[in-house]
Length: 588
Image (cartoon, one colour):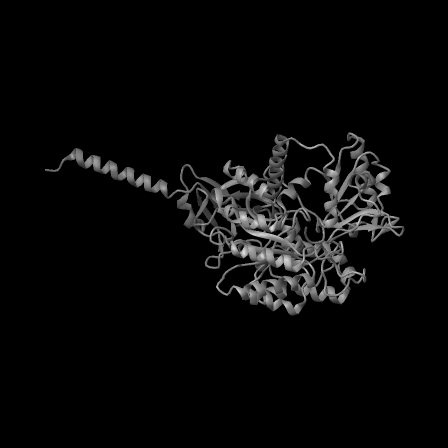
């Protein structure tokens, strides 16, 4: 005989299970009514996304995603706006970005007089003997050359007049030079008799006196000056580090950057990142390249510092960074032929090739990726030669994904070698905007057109090309770097080597999935694919469809990291941005 009570209990259990299953199929966050570019070749366009936890649960039409909405689901109406994978900055300096918020911002100076005025105002409120710092100046951006000058850069007497009792150190936008005043020179013990360090130059005037300009490794001499200044306590240093990380993250998130390839940190800095990751206080995902450590230390410690997706994918360490030459703007890029505007120089070698190769072999031994800064055509060729020798000696090693950072000036005959060797070109589209007006001054018109920022040629050869900003050399804003890649239009409105432009789809992939591939994270990041981290950015204008010249007027409305909204500009959104960057010339 049927037990009515048993049937009732069974029915209740079934209904409860059905309700539980229904709730399990609900999303925590749903985006509806959008124009979604997924960068997933299997499903390139969509209208809606469902997110559960920190992962993408489903992507599809509004009708397909609507069932994911439950009573506890947060729903965002995109109102037709563009949603896309979070930007991955393929090359920048994370702590440098944070530190730039704590010093004088010289990026907007239209003349040397503007910078002198900033230093004067800072010195008035500073205790005598304390250090005044700034960064971001670039002599090619000024509307007139200072007088007197050497190589277009002033003499330190102009700073001495406004800051006689405070040492001043002003870093070039590229990070490859600094300008200091007389107080700083004295504190560092730099005189007319101080020899140039290897890989650097103490620029001097016609009488043999230091001008105040320190190129490349000569900047390291300022370490002697800093050592004589009051030091922060350990607690103060930690507080400063945390503030630097916070400031960099806030800026990056406000511009849609959810992941950041940090091009150089020592082990102590990585320790700091790891502690913040444990505390869930890293603002963005970091892919950190080990740098500033001697070979013996690398060999001893690389294995213990290897981290893959630590703390829910917030911190990865599996690469090293090296630097073979300097920047074009400071005449430090290593060229095959001398500079047009400085025929006595073909640039600087910052680390001898045998040492570059030795360090790279140590990295290979520990299964670490190698990423080498190379700006000039000679530097790029030498790095390709190093990689080729190492790969030839290790035929059993596959899928290494070694990179050349910047790859700004390449002899066209070397382009096929990138593809043959599987070398990734880690580039920055925004440099075409900021550098375009003066590259020909350094290289001459023909060489500039033949070798500079060969995006189209590299992509046509099948090379993986990535995008970034090299921040704080440039603003961390990806939209300007995207714009530079597709338009190559300088701030004067001219198009710099137009035949090297790329499509918007290629530029988007370079800033998302290609960057994920270049950090071995393509299964977790870089496209809006179910199962990947829910890192999503929503823009005010659709940079994939609006007229090209309107791209710089777009801004970020929402930045979503791991399914959580980390930036929402609904209360204070920028109305527009300038049509060109005031940044530097290609890399630290």
